[in-house]
Image 1: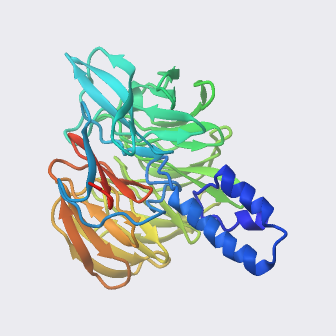
Image 2 (image 1 turned 120 degrees about the vertical axis):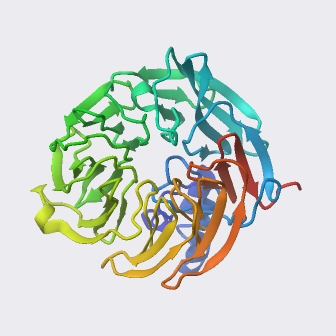
Image 3 (image 1 turned 30 degrees about the horizontal axis):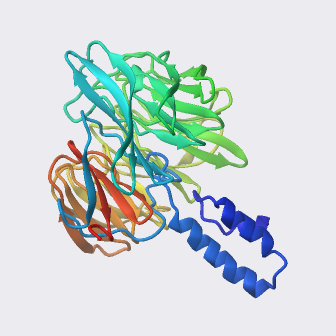
Length: 440
């Protein structure tokens, strides 16, 4: 049984029926086992979910059946639903249900909300207010009060609105199981980073204008499990990064870039394990992990990608930096690792492919437009979505090649999500389901 499960792709899970079938075939001859294992993998891929920011493994990879690479306001649109208010969080999709967060204006205040929609029809299954805010705080014009992406896990939906609160909802009906408002700090331009779920804790980056820290909320009780102040106090201390989770020599670690440093934390108690100290601030992208490296941006105004070897103790700045790239580095979109190649797009539309191990650049091209959404690897290609609804498909490889372009109306700051052969694309007004069987 263990050998069979080893064939399942990372981020996927076997259904009960597939699991029982696997158990029954263990006594069959080896060639039949291999054939059935292949079918099991196809079964898993066919029921892929998108449970958090940047997909099942939080790496921007879409698995499962192919989705359309051509669409418009009407082409290949299975449904289009108006989402009230504004939110730049990515939708999450689990078990044929789509979950989104939004912030709806209510006089001078806000209604922070979560919605569940039927993936087949787009019908709203429930619409729940998580918290009412009497006076809406100011934010950057590119931000929203619902920018962090939710997380689905084990029948629960965890929604995060930055300093305005974090909640656990019962996914079946949206009822609030707990609401945590203890992580108070002075944000600049609003909140942006999404939480990650690690060892039963929601880890959140809380880098405000003063006293930046990283914290963890117990996923069962909603109580704050730990708070760790940043060990470096830079001149400007606000950032908006989403952390990443990695296993290093059998130890789970949370990697959290921030102002003036990149640090790894023990999810059990928040203890800082190692750090890289490089000046910078207003860090946004989620790191990419692969080939024994973590690749991250350390500054907004003068963006630069740094690749550092994973692990170590204390300050490893002088010993662990493998390479650095300034040209075309992103301030907002996360870098995307596909095999040996790293793909990234700058906020002003310069797209780059580089060797992930060495940092050697293969090609640099200008697409034009501005970008906030992170690239996604889907249908064997790289999807790049501009802020004005223009999508460009790039072929993978060491030679630049555009596979196609398409467009929808409206602003598009949220990273698209993929599940079950469909793409879920959010604009400032609508949520689209793009699918091959649209209109059938």
